[in-house]
Structures are given as C-alpha cells and as structure tokens.
Length: 216
Image 1 (cartoon, rainbow, N blue to C red):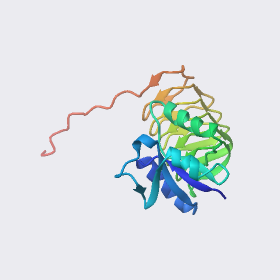
Image 2: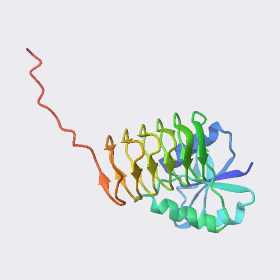
Image 3: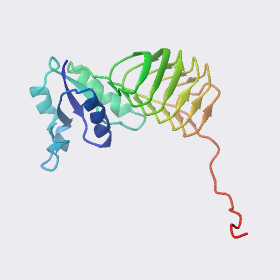
Image 4: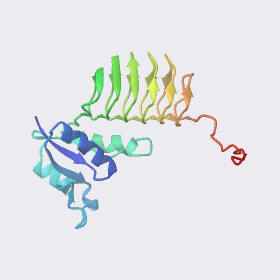
C-alpha cells in the first residue's frame, strides 16, 4: 500500500487525516504550494509540511498517492484544477472512506466520504466528491465529479447529481430527478424537478415568530 501525502493544512485536512488514521494509512507529509510555505507552517499534526516542489522530488507517484485535503471553492473548480495538475504529473488520488460507511457502490478516485453515509445498490460515485456525515443514497443513484454534499442530504432512487454541485444540509432530491452541473441547492430545499445548470435553489426563508407572553 502506498504512502499518503495530504494536500492542504486547513480544517478539512484535519478531517481527512482523522479518517486516514482510522485506516492506519501512513501519512508522510502535508503539502502546500511553495509560496505558502513559511517558518510558521512547517508541521501539522506533528507531520512535516513541505512545498509542492519538494513533494515532487521526494515522494514519487510510484510510492505515494495523494489526498485532496481542501474544499476548493467556488463550486469546487479550484479543487479540480489542483487535482488535475497533480494527475498530469502521474499522481493518483486515494479515496478516503470512513470505516462507518455502508456502501454497495462503484466509486471513482479522490473522494472523501465521512461517517454514517449510506451508498446503496447500484450507486455510482465519480471523482473528487466530498460527502459529509449522514448522507443517504438509497439505490440507483449517480453522482458526478467534484460535488460537495452536506450533512444529512438525501436522494431518492434513480436521482442524479451532475458535477460541481453543492447540495446543502438536509436537502432532499426526489426520485428520478437530475440536478445538473453547477447547481447550488440550499439547506433544507426539496428538489422535485430537474434543475437548470448554474441555478441556485433555496427553500422559503425561515423567520422569527412573535413569542406569546410566557408570564400568563
């Protein structure tokens, strides 16, 4: 099994590192672009932080695979751009799948799938996705590339998500619906029709009610 180098040193890098520890993967370094390397940024989780140029020299694709430890907004274009740059150098990206995940799915590469996610029968997951805790794909679902699917979002059967989409917390996608590329779905939204690429969909706004006099 190859060693792991994690790209990034932020909060998301910490999350993926904790999952890698569960699997007892050997993380040899965290990596940042050379211009972000400084005397204040030499160690993360007691593991060396190195620049991209040193990574390429010291850890070759033959011995090391990468993990994208960053989210890469807006709409995850930066995430794909950085991954593509490293892939062009011959590196592959490992899937980081929590030990609590239940799945019967076909999964691409470079995905981060967190605890208590359910990936049901005949579900297809592409590359570079971030799937947060409690997400449910029951069966016959298709997820494209570089999506960010927030906690407790759920799809019904035969629903599809394209690429570069954001699906908010507790959003629900109806069966046989397609969420097309670059769709932003707000928290708690219910998607009952196919979306147009590039649209933003949010539920009715929450607002504060006048509270009755509790002294009565």
